[in-house]
Length: 57
Image 1: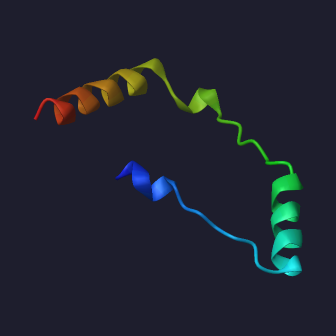
Image 2 (image 1 turned 120 degrees about the horizontal axis):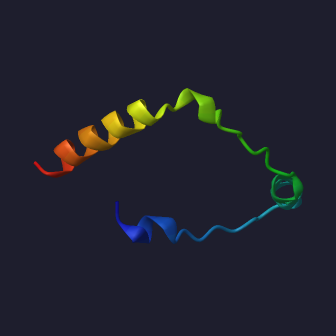
């Protein structure tokens, strides 16, 4: 993916758009906690092996 796709310019033309943007920016994000018990060392090793195989092709 080209990095230029991340350099988008946008303009807030209306008061409603500005208020909506402010609401989005001021709302705290919810962090997602990952259950580390789902990943056993064996599954991690198997995943690493699969990744190495795919990348070596």
